[in-house]
Image (cartoon, rainbow, N blue to C red):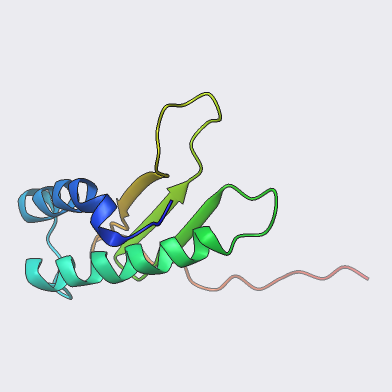
Length: 106
C-alpha cells in the first residue's frame, strides 16, 4: 500500500476541528496548524515505513503536536495504519520543576 497524507485527511480534519474549538496555542494559528499536521503526518509515514523489524509505530512530533501511526492488529480489516494525533498541552500556570541536585553516596 502506498501511504500518503491524503489517506489521513479525515484524522487531520478531526484534529483541526478540535484545535479550533478547544486549543489555544499562541505559537500556531489554525492555518499554521494544518500545515504542521500535514508535515508531521509525512514524517510519521516515513518513520512508519522505515521502522526496524518488530516495531509497530512511526512517530513524528513538534512542541505542540505528536502524531503516531500504528500497525493495525493482524486480524483487523483496516488497510492503513491507525493514526493518533495528540496535542501536547501545557498551561502557563504549570509550575516548572527546578533542577534537583543529585545526591551521590560514596
